[in-house]
Image 1: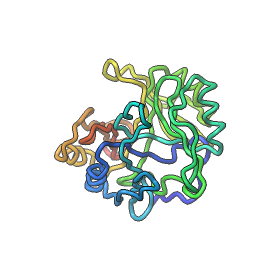
Image 2 (image 1 turned 90 degrees about the horizontal axis):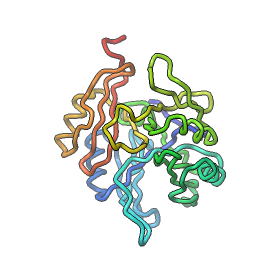
Image 3 (image 1 turned 90 degrees about the vertical axis):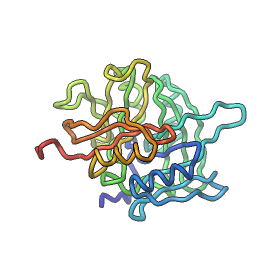
Length: 261
């Protein structure tokens, strides 16, 4: 099992969570789909649920909340980038044309967080670990395996994310696709919106590892979700993009190259 025991280095996606109107329904859906275990948390955490896979933290699910007078946030998965100084990271966001949507705050003794939008409008989180490092299991069935920035302006994104510890470069063998590199590792991907439906905003897309893409997509639809991109083979395996029953978009991939290549 690809278990993570040390804090993530700056720039590496370290956590993902879902804000959703019906928290219990989401917990039930992802339990059935990925085998996660999780329950609504205590009031002091706002009911936040840390879901686990094989007893290790894998993702979070929380009920939609908004400050009084503010619009209700969309139902969406949010990718968090690790940082060793969330205050400095939010300053970098502002300095490079982004927007701090939720300012840096303490999460008990677990760490410090913020939520921001980059200079092209894609929303992401920042996490400065203390007692909680983030995902403790990755890159296996039911866990996060990839994070992808889909952006209206790849050149602007390259400049923006540099100060958050991410360097962006063309990915060899994948025309029009870029690798996100942090701490000497490829930690995600980036592409433009030219192949997306008209009006698609810049966004981060979370990919979950599955052992059978087609059967997972069937399970999503049986549970009331929908298919945005049907299963297809590509250089990294067989993938699809789906929407859960409450409207959150995510990707699933069986990371085996076609024909066993």
